[in-house]
Every structure is written in C-alpha cells, then in structure tokens.
Image (cartoon, rainbow, N blue to C red):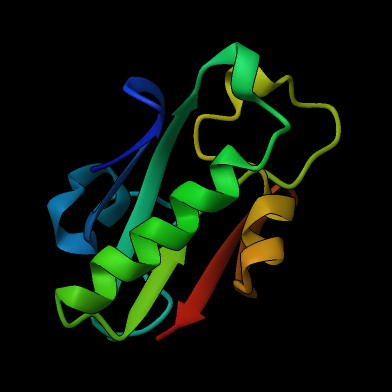
Length: 121
C-alpha cells in the first residue's frame, strides 16, 4: 500500500495491487470485471480525520498511480462511492470526486452509487 506522511507522522493510506489480489472484487456482482484487461485496483483508503478535505486522498491516488506505473501497470481502476449522502467514515473506497480530480474516468456503473473508474497510464 501507499502511506502519506506529515513530516514523520502517517496521516493516510491506500491499498493498491493487481485486481487478482482481491478475491472480493473477483466475486462482486456490482464491481465485476468489465473486460479482460489487466488492471491494478485501488480498493481502500484511510485518512486521519484531522487531514480530511486537505488533498491527502488525491496525493495518495497520485502516488498509487506512480507505484502502479513502476510495476508496469497500464490501467488503474478504482471503485469509489458517488453519493452525497454517504458519511466520510463509510467511504473507505473514497469518493468519485477525488478520482475525477486526479484524472480517472468513469467506464462502467454497476449500481447508482458505485462507478468503476479507470486511469490509463
């Protein structure tokens, strides 16, 4: 995973691995594969409450893209929440707005609030 720091203190984290590493994704009805492309998946975030709404999530996403590219990934996929009614504490997959800010594009929607978003490296 990727860790964000403020000086020496960890303030955020996100998980990124090849999609095959996440069995729950492979078995999900809402987030099922949309094609046979090899993708890396960003699946989970945590940002310390004091650092939320300060751009930490976007920095984590940018670092995740760099990490994936160094590992020869061509596509990074995310599964954020796209709902204004979800409290931050329940948005462990992040909000779609953060993915959009970094340049991810929606490629599929398995439910009204769960887009699949991709970034092509």
